[in-house]
Image 1 (cartoon, one colour):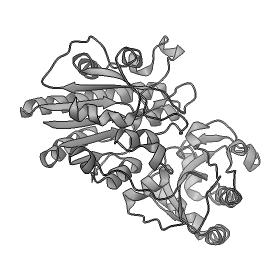
Image 2 (cartoon, rainbow, N blue to C red; image 1 turned 180 degrees about the horizontal axis):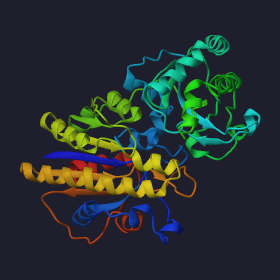
Image 3 (cartoon, helix red, strand yellow; image 1 turned 90 degrees about the vertical axis):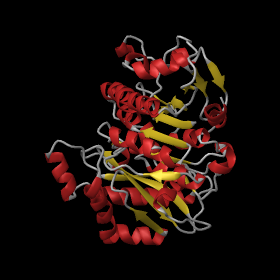
Image 4 (spheres, rainbow, N blue to C red; image 1 turned 180 degrees about the vertical axis):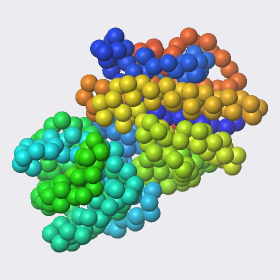
Length: 409
């Protein structure tokens, strides 16, 4: 028996008036996921425990059997594990997003947060802008005084580590949940270290706003990556070993450092795919191939697709629908076909990690749909894969229980 987990990040949503009161999952054409939902066990699951922030960090921890109420310290340390960054006692790790702040003469606090991803900046441009900060004497001196260093990620998702600091009480705001709001509403607060981080964010905007890369991006009709944003603070924390808990070996296929870090910390293999971007243009076929190859040496393979979440954050409802349809046609459909043709029995869990709302462009807690399909059985439930039908199925009160449903039925 082989086991596959497919996570469509942020697919779940609320009804959207522009879609005739349907959710994007209901509106999208998803014949393969609907077929699996009808033949399998379909329901809803609470992946984000009450009181914790609704995001992929908390949700995916719980999906992989790690109770976030006891092991979650923040997103950034999980991402750090994917790159081999070693945190010492007393270190804090932050996500250091490249962001777009509103152009114009407004003072820093009054500028709006336009993009949480610097206009989806990638590759050498993003790394060069991060390097430019530390080439600036004023920013470099402030960073050295703060004990802060940064690690380029060749995307908007850079990381920063601050030595010998106390993050007790520190409140950092996820930029993707506050798009269109002013910087001043969402600056770091809650501790003396907040002022240190705020000063670095101010200095970064001064350095980056007129940088040649951003001048070029504006001329090309792209958003400038003219700021940095610290969030997802945390310290190192051990996670439950996946193999010991479930007796299965496996690998995780994702373009997102968070998923790669959770894989590393739980003893699963990180499987990287060339051309995997975390956007609509990701290498879907490469991810399918990676799942099949992983299952040759392991019992379990997980594949994560970020595009629905990113499209929602970007206010692209059409793109979210397209992303959901591509997950169905270019991930789930070919996977089921190739697994069936292999002649092996398999079980597949298809789900979303959390809700990402078209109405707010931000994350939201609450139950999300899942379906567990077993190639040996057809339960003929007549349900389809969407929020409404999931509510008619089996409710799982904690995401930590879901992997057992995949492995044990």
